[in-house]
Image: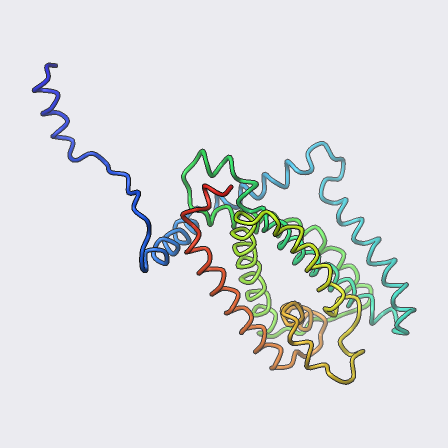
Length: 287
């Protein structure tokens, strides 16, 4: 093929693809972030499989795999339940179900924060090698933490059966679980962006979560505070945990707790989405 024929063949293929290197301006950040979420939702099966493979690789060669976590959780709940029930002068049949549910929920929340800080940095090789929505990596961490959490649910079920705890079967259970799942995804997204930009975020958040662990009613029941109980609502972890713990424990959840939980969720999603939209184009250079 001579040069004129080659030019004619190239012209018939249409214009050459152009790589856009112009910075995003105006609402382009929001539009591209929403497109990222939409494409990531379309790759839900990929995110689920990546999270599942992370669990398999983490416990490869182990005899019991993630069930070691179930055993350790059962031992921790049993020993701490007897000790703190004696210290707080609470009947074991009342305190142990509360403690088991609270500790496992807190472990789930704490792992979401810690794992979320490395949501993008641990996937640096995949981000540099394959072009895919960043929300897939957030979904991968979310699925991994959820599968890990499921291995501790058996402890809660066993304690509830032994002490005959009956959940309140109404709209609060699906609403609480739905809001909880949305918040955990937003936390993973927020921590992932911050952890990619600032490498000091993981130790800082570790210290913050350790402080919140003692402030939030996890080891102690909110009923132990007689005056000033309304100030617990300033702790964002308390309403987030209570809207799930209350219905499953069969205790009513005050409307003020639901209202604050929804407000915290809205603020969390707005901040997470806007930060992701603003920093999304730079994530590949930070990891």
